[in-house]
Amino acid sequence: MTQATDPVDLTAKLVRCASVTPEEGGALGVLSTLLERAGFECHRVDRGLVSNLYARWGAKGANRSFGFNGHTDVVPVGDVEAWTVDPFGAEIKDGWLYGRGSTDMKSGVAAFAAAAVDFVRDTPPDGAVVLAITGDEEGPAVDGTVALLDWMAEQGEAMTDCLVGEPTCPNEMGEMMKIGRRGSMTAYFVVKGVQGHSAYPHRALNPVPVMARLMDRLASHVLDEGTDHFDASTLAVTTIDTGNAATNVIPAECRATVNIRFNDAHSSGSVTEWLQGEVDAMAAESGAVIEMRVAVSGESFVTPPGGFSNMVAAAVEAETGVAPELSTSGGTSDARFVKNHCPVVEFGLVGKTMHQVDERVEVAHIHQLKSIYTRVLRDYFA
Image (cartoon, rainbow, N blue to C red):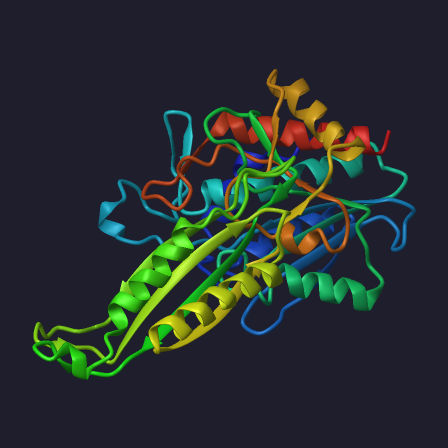
């Protein structure tokens, strides 16, 4: 009998690859070697400075194709001296595997890769199994999953449904999966006034109170009360700054930034239109020139609860004894790109230590996650 693929050993091998965005660090090489030995057809889909991996078992254009999506890039370690272990040592102690990316999300990639390899070897399915793995999730995310999906469209490759392996559980294994994500956008403002002496404010046009009034209006506005699958949208003022060190000078300009997380009652376009209306009104009221620039990270989306999400939820409950909440909370993920290609849901580990010093994952949870993904594959192709 062929030995089962150990997801903990694979996680350790991946953690030892220093793949800080956009460095590949050897992680995709580890995966492609494993997958090719199991009969997967592997393609490196590199774009810009980013390395990505597409792997498929089964026929191209199969009647159904189950996909996993994840990333092997990690955030910087920060202060190395603050770590109690080597950030890339993959040390195991007291039932935990330590290292940068151990939670977010090399253990998730290892779990679905191990599940996929063993599944196609032991019970070859009627269809295809696809792994789309990126090295640009923690970075700008323009040459990662987006590049993979662009390449897939050019090559006629497709996923019928996709499971993203990001950490989704806040505290307990199995408690939450994601069926959507809020949209995310950032707006940058510049109020241009007239510089002057603070003793003669009538000879200047102070941009600071103009910006303060604008920010208060934006922050006080209720965007919505929430929708069927989402909490209320939020707007946070993240900075107001003039760079003015002098106490007797009215500055010439003031800058501010807001971050908005919006639900499916809005689009980035509708939110931008509202912001511009507030800017125009404040400019007319104050006489100041106000400029605005908007950067959109992703649109809001939801995969309505149904057969696919129910199947994943049933697999999670069967392996953990916990019925997962179908949530749209949290930040953004690469599911925001996949949703344009096929239905997508997310399930992964407890994410409490991701991006922290001494990031770590419970060893038992890695095995459990592989079992969940294996059950999902078995049920999908049943």
